[in-house]
Image 1 (cartoon, rainbow, N blue to C red):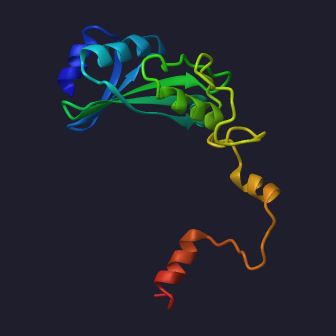
Image 2 (image 1 turned 180 degrees about the vertical axis):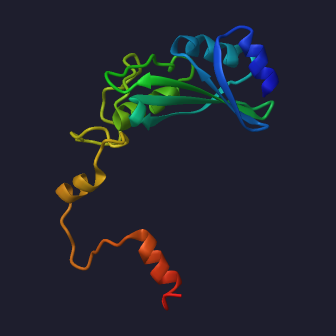
Image 3 (image 1 turned 30 degrees about the vertical axis):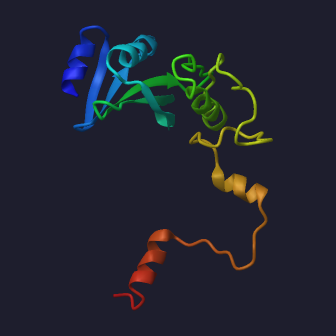
Amino acid sequence: MRELYDRLKQRFELGELTEQRPDLAFITVAREVLRPLLLHLRDKEGFTHLVLLTAVDWIEEGEFQLTYLLSNRKAAVDVGLRLMIPRDGVAMESIHDLWPTAATYQRELREMFGIDFPDSPRVNEEFILEGWRDIPPYRRDFDTLKYAQESYNDRPGRETRDPEQYMKEQLYPDGK
């Protein structure tokens, strides 16, 4: 993967390379490099399959990390492109014209994280969360406990336990 990275670095301004395995690496890129790099990887380097498009909420930094994972099936290698975008008022260019399947990922990211892809087909239609009116549930500031308490009735017999203490009791019932 180092050879691919070095070859790409001659044409594109790239950030950090993280080699996970001999057949999987991640490259940090800037937003303005993403589309030309995706085109190059698809058309010149054989990365013809978009495996997934996903996000991570780095709430402490006020950013989302988008990861575009591509596969070169002939060479049996995968490369992920990572980029950081701001959490607030976030919008990203769609890549559905490069890989039509990206439209589905982009709809999910809009609904679950609030990341907008304005030109993506059907991106504004409800997808998974029909009738959802709260903040996107995959954002780390979404309070799942509060949501559950407001949405569901308590059932008799349900109790909350500290997982660490509970497992100790299960594994060591005699306290030893």
